[in-house]
Amino acid sequence: MNTLEKIEHYFTKSSPWQKGLQQLRTVIKDTELQEDWKWSLPCYTINGRNVVGIANFKNHFGVWFFQGVFLEDKKNLLRNAQDGKTKAMRSLHYESLEEIDPTILKEYLLEAIQNAKDRKEIKPNRSKKKTIIPVELESAFKSYNNEEVYTEHSRSTKAQSLKTAFEALSPSKQREYTEHIGGAKQEATRLRRLEKCIPMILEGKGLNDKYKKC
Image (cartoon, rainbow, N blue to C red; front, side, top):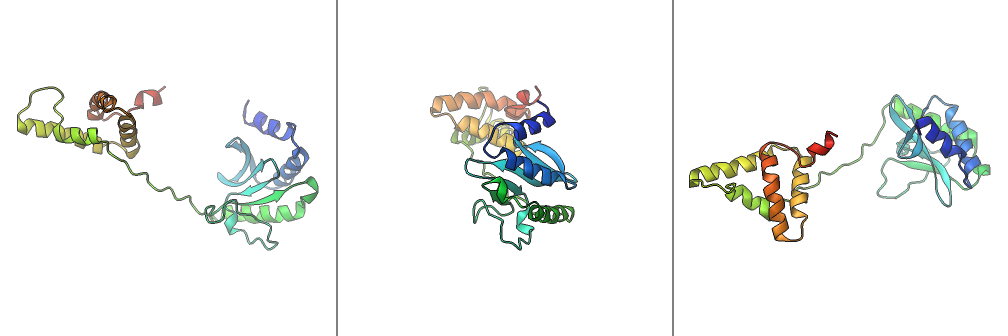
């Protein structure tokens, strides 16, 4: 299904909240927000920015404001999905069609739209995942000789080239190799994986590059 078909199916499929969801959609579409389909749910944007989304659960349905923390919430209706964890997103919950007040919802929507235009946002904190080098790869950095005979000087140079090549990879490619090699339970398996990975590392390739080109 294309985007429009997915959206239409969402609002017409059988659900205890079907009429309520349709009402929310009607109110939202009466604004300048653009309807889209993201994360398998209807999402509404302006100038490419996510403003609100619609979702339904077992016991309720509602509207999610992506940057709801900036809403004044004079009527104290907004909820935080996880206090202490959810920094920006806030929501309006409903348990029946009758609970929806289009006028109040419109007020929140218009404020959210203006906040999006003003570029008010809290960006998610994406902490960098530390790359843990497996013992086998660390050892290869120091002594790798590729099954050939080297003098102590040339062996050191070869090992340095492997370490240099690895460090030149992007963090994501480094993690691909470390997780692939270190993820094996048996030492023999880790060593076999290492030997297969070394030529690709020296060539500056990522472990999964061949699949990314498909």
